[in-house]
Image (tube, rainbow, N blue to C red; front, side):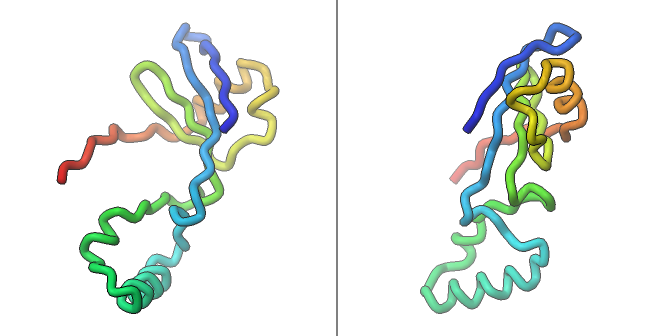
Length: 112
């Protein structure tokens, strides 16, 4: 995972890093076809699907190949696809990538 720190034009500090999901986290966009395949595989393996599906990550469309994450003091954003020059570009360009990134809703820890 590559990493960069920068300060935007408003004085906010950001950490930028690339994220590439594991192969097991990637899911096909056609959920019905993917779900049918998963159900069949789970049945063959004797897996309790109620537990197994709760742990599977579902990536939003377009994120299967990875994203650029921007972590600020009070927010997190994701940009896909990852710009090829993000490691070497000027900070103003990195800031424009950050501005274009999609805000991530707050993640809450799960109980159980």
